[in-house]
Length: 256
Image: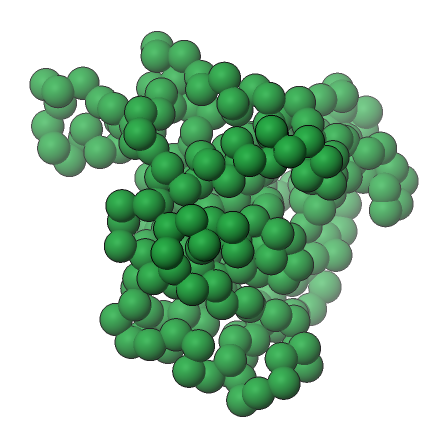
C-alpha cells in the first residue's frame, strides 16, 4: 500500500502534484481527492483516538444515548492513547518513491517482523470484536489475508477470502468497483457465507474506500450483515470512510 509523500505518517510532504490512482485499495493520496463520495458520514472509530478498556471506548455518562455512542470513539485527546498504538505506528515503515517517484509506500512488513507489535495489532482487533457475535471475518486480498485469519481464530469465526478475479476455483459471485482509470473486481465463493451471519471486513489500509465498498456489497448480497470494517491504517485525507454507506470503520493508525 502506498501514499504520496505529503500524506505519509512520518516524513514531511515534498510535493503536492496530483497523482493518478492505480488502485482504490492502495495506500495513496492526492491533493485532489476523489469527489465521488456519499453524503452520509459514518461514525469514526479509531483506537488511536480513543481510550480502550476491554476493547470498548468510554463516553461521559451524562450524554444522551444517541451522542454517547459517537463520543465514545473520539476522546483520545482527553483520555490519552493506548501505548500499544504508538508502538504499532513506529513499526510501519514509509518507503519513499515506491513503486514510482512521488509515492510514499506504507509498508506493514516491518510491523510483521516485530512479534510484539504484530501481536498487539491482532489483540486490539480481538478485544473489540470478541463479544460482538461475529461469525464471519472476510479478508480482502492480499494484506487482509495477513490480519484476518488470526482475528477469526481468536474470536471463533470463520475466515472468508475475498479475492481478485480468477483466483478462486469454485463457483463465485463477483462485485466490480470503480477505479480512477477503470474498474476492478472482488470475488467470493458461493456458499461461503450464509444469510443472517454477522460479518467483519478486514484489510490493512483504507484509502478511497472502493475496495471496502465492494467487499461489503458481496457479503450483503449473500445475506450477511456487515457489522463493521476494520483496517490497520487509514488515509483520512482521501475520505474513504465517507463512501462506506454509513457503515462504521475502525482503524488503529492514521497516516497524514
